[in-house]
Amino acid sequence: NAGVTQTPKFRVLKTGQSMTLLCAQDMNHEYMYWYRQDPGMGLRLIHYSVGEGTTAKGEVPDGYNVSRLKKQNFLLGLESAAPSQTSVYFCASKNPDYIANTGELFFGEGSRLTVL
Amino acid sequence: AQSVTQLDSQVPVFEEAPVELRCNYSSSVSVYLFWYVQYPNQGLQLLLKYLSGSTLVKGINGFEAEFNKSQTSFHLRKPSVHISDTAEYFCAVSLAGGSYIPTFGRGTSLIVHP
Image (cartoon, rainbow over all chains, first blue to last red):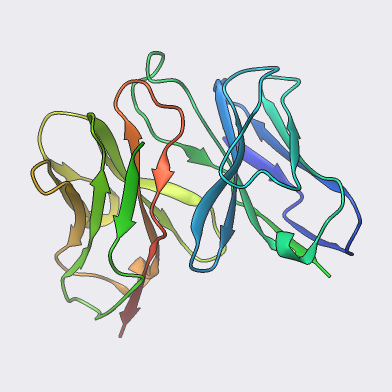
């Protein structure tokens, strides 16, 4: 059981380049999230999705786009990377409380992105 | 909206000593509370959670936390830490039974010295 898988795990980009991070979960979860983690800032929510075909903005959405075409996948895109987007990105998933009243998020292992 | 405050950004402690990591939250409605642990270069994993019932919650690796509604706190404790407990610890809160956006604290770095 893989859980939540993120690819790639590491990436170096030049300013202005674009890229996509892929998150895949095999737990049939409805909700999926993209966070970024920066020193001293904790986890900040970028975008989230409450179901296939739906997405919504989180706390820090600027410069990012997302898509949830399939229930198991949640893609995070950077159209024109900036050095301020150097960070560790985490994907997470869970089910709504009315389906599985456990509440917790399941996280991937992270994707470390450096923008030069 | 709910919020979470982790009062200490870093907690140094010697091996086999007790430790407490503090977490306070604010919310006008009932909440679920969580502690997650992040070991170096890894993702977050659930340490323990409070949904309802007994206010003393036991988790993995000998950790426990107590939900105190009057003080809006959910402090994490361990009576005797090991070197392997060195990690980042995150407190999180979500609205009970209906929220899909949990709120995380900024994290506390637990550093265990030999």
